[in-house]
Image 1 (spheres, rainbow, N blue to C red):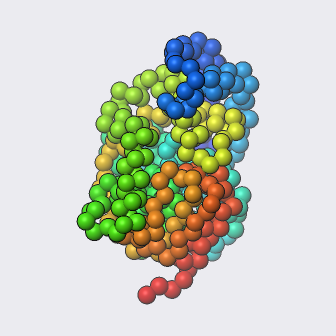
Image 2 (image 1 turned 90 degrees about the horizontal axis):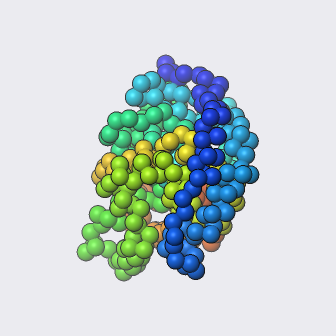
Image 3 (image 1 turned 90 degrees about the vertical axis):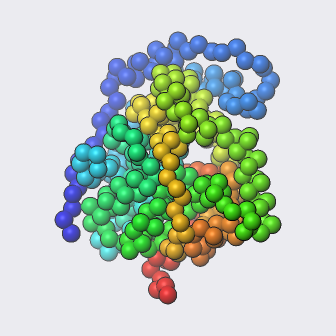
Length: 366
């Protein structure tokens, strides 16, 4: 196979000192809003928590140490122009199974940093999805999850892999489903931590059983309480983006509330600041809204054999009965701990379930 791979040891460049200095100046000049006291996280990001986080970001956080670890990942770039995709490519032996790991929002390839050392016997491809941190600049509309799936398929093929297992959650789950449907000859199996949320939006309630209807009611309650960000990012993203791109305090408030409330175990301060800094220094918060603003119909039924990991403290884990309407659930693995960022929170359990999917992909299916 002819590979269209641009091999670059460090396709990412260190952030200029001037940008680090600019961040500190902005943080020092933060204008804090007067807010009612004593409400904690009830109305969004806790003001006291945010104040402490911003102080640490300005005075103590060592971006250069985190940046060095990020730059040290095995980056490669496939394709060129508007088909270019930057990936972390951790190589094993030529005949080792291949897995593709797809991140979500508001994170990046950093979601999988704790999993990579557990998968050294596999060939691992982790795309920086278009519009997200570390990806090539996204300047044109139309980057739906289906378009992301197409780019990912092209990138993995360019790396020389014709058959692979795809693992993802959040936006990555949507991309994974689209990829499996559009390239059934390449996707041997899926490992998902959730099915696409759009299945709940378009579900025919008249065809569902009591358990599934109860699940849709849970989703509706979650949407009313937690889904404001979806409404804004999907309808008026260009109104929101300038505020978050210009204010590190605003960006931190927007992201940290999700990282804290969607995870089972709170992130450490250094981890929070690393993930937020990834968005700040790459200036990608606005373009990361693309999967919300660029509508793509959910994938139809996905026949690829699927392992579905249900982490108890994820935002709205679907029961097996509902998920099985949309993906070919061969194994449904329930975990009592772990939240939305399972690959980061529970890397060993995540890796174990991913290996279940690898085994499925190598098993003969009728």
